[in-house]
Image 1 (cartoon, one colour):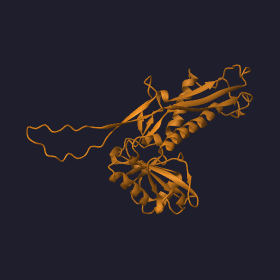
Image 2 (spheres, helix red, strand yellow):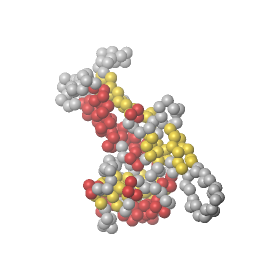
Image 3 (cartoon, one colour):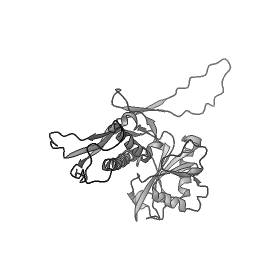
Image 4 (spheres, one colour):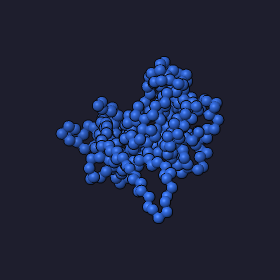
Length: 312
């Protein structure tokens, strides 16, 4: 890892009695708003001294009870089946060296700036791990009638019709929605460009006008056709017939599980003391790590939409 060429004071100026708590809080304040996909998952706390696996239990769907009851006769008990899904939380992290050579020359709060960049890196890492679990593992939908991602052309864009189709897929499969019977639709800015350019999307409701929800989600821009729309760049692109493709996800409730990042889920580290590798204290280090897991709970409860874009 290349050393940073800008220095930092070994004791950065702040009014906190415990600088570690200050940096932890600053890191989380930057990290949390930028982790988008986790808002759509079934959250679970990390297990503490309870084995190496985190578990989700999914109730099996019950069929309609159409047999009339007989007087003075107890009906046969209905067995509620469950499916246990497990995942092993793994640890991810990164760190940087901060040179002290320019300690007296820098005028920028370099520790804070580097930590902000690392918080963005951690948020991207968190969402990418979720994306990797979801990608190709849920219901596929290819825009414009394409049959695969590699056949998608630029003209096969995200539009109101594609969203209606995805909502129909979930509704017809009786996939439960979130609050106020709304699904969550996570899209790339290129898909946002195309969706808002579609004149058929006449019932788009700006997020600021949501008066019936508890609060606006991170990245939320509005709602359309029973879906709350969230925009993020934390969605890797693919390759189509003529250009890049953009992946979007429409989520129903309990489509995937993910661990919490609060409490024991995230830690930051800053060391300025010397050691055998740094005997003259020529640099300090700053880094982060978290433990997490993401797991598909039911593939039919989410749709991945592949599209081109007129924005690129």
